[in-house]
Length: 368
Ligand SMILES: Nc1ncnc2c1ncn2[C@@H]1O[C@H](COP(=O)(O)OP(=O)(O)OP(=O)(O)O)[C@@H](O)[C@H]1O
Ligand SMILES: [Mg+2]
Image (cartoon, rainbow, N blue to C red; front, side):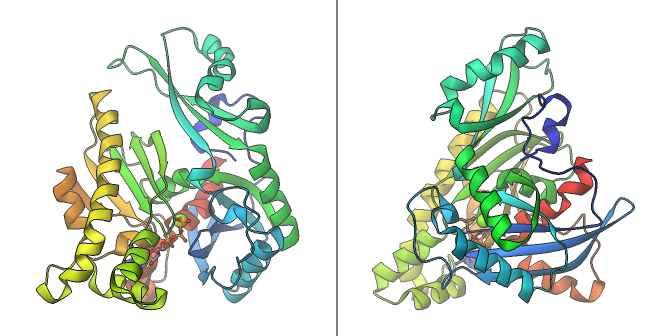
């Protein structure tokens, strides 16, 4: 995996980019726990043009879990490869060069404070310091890090460190081989979302990606990720709660969740009352992480962008705005992509689910 922000100072051999040169088209592949999304972009000068995209539900493909890893990673290589092959075929993807996302809950991203010593000294010290922050032996992970700007408002120099288990990297390589794609890079999904939603906007923004199994938070300031965190709570919990609370099937619960959302109509209170405590608890957890961030800096979070399929829950944006006390919007991941005008209304509807895949497909445009 390579994170564009890490470019300047990644020690040789420590980025997770596998191939050099710049292809003319790239497919971003986001294997989620609910569905798998692909987006193919063509690069023309410094523009990215949408060529095709598609989504396939995972149900029916990923059944036998091996028990290792988080999210889709615990399923069999061959089942994941079949799923990816089918979504690529159904979406008429022609690109063979792919960038894939690592679930935020499968990697570790931490910010480590250092005293104001020289950059060389920091680079030497990071692998030693990393031991205290990464909960598995360093021999089993691949590390990459960047020194965040030397900020006068702080009395420390912050280093953003990313660690991905080697086992996860190997799994991606096996899946790619079975699928017949060339993996150009793998990247923790938080960074992909930031690339599609934020670009170069300097405003301090929190990006929340609410998925099926997990929710991720990234805090971005002046275009640089300062904090990245994964929470093991997602929209699936809402479906399960409706299923149990109202004694209905999973399909019915899913439909009710989408139809009703956090409605305040009296006849829909039963569904709302099942979901609201779970949503509030997730918002509280995310808010806690944002407040911890705010406490350490004078550049406080100015706005929050929601994305991910789970962010489509009716009433969520308003509830979050009240809860956080900041401006909350739904980000537009297609804003940096050239798209045909006639499909724009449709893209707006599906865009929350595609922000990771779009960010992945944009990777090559910004990384070289
Ligand atoms: N209109 C809607 N209202 C409420 N929930 C929705 C709506 N549309 C989709 N969802 C929910 O969004 C979730 C899927 O979102 P997404 O595609 O971002 O997840 P994923 O990427 O597969 O999962 P993860 O990132 O956690 O592995 C599902 O739980 C789905 O029920
Ligand atoms: Mg996802």
